[in-house]
Length: 158
Image (cartoon, rainbow, N blue to C red; front, side):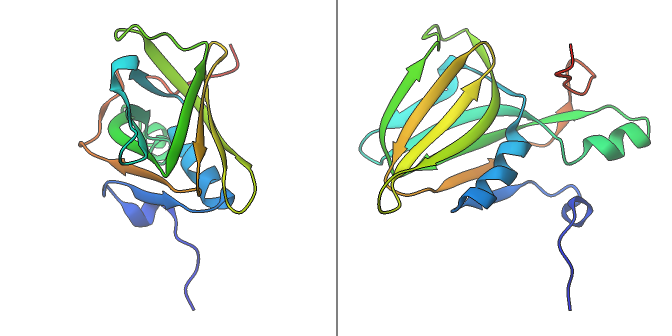
């Protein structure tokens, strides 16, 4: 009998995760919390019905080990893809390509027959809503980890 997987099981392998239900989405939401990205790294391909972000995510899965071993915390570039995107709307999101945004969470509001709306909540009261035919979100690391420029774990207490 095998137990649940742990972060240590992944070692230094890049993450490749897919969310097909809200439990899976909760895991991805936790891993992308405090990811930063410039507005220029958001794309919506209407023809392929795909909304994607190239994000610089904080490696929450490595942070406890890094702090315990007194080594720098890390970030990694990742692609966050929302499949079956039918419509994308935003509120409080700058269209300026140089604007850097911080992703706080992902949530799914279910509709009828598997449809719904994926809400990407951003720092500063911004939000992106993606209407989807079905919930399918993919998170994939695309670079090697690098030392977080701030050298700090993100903190929401201040």
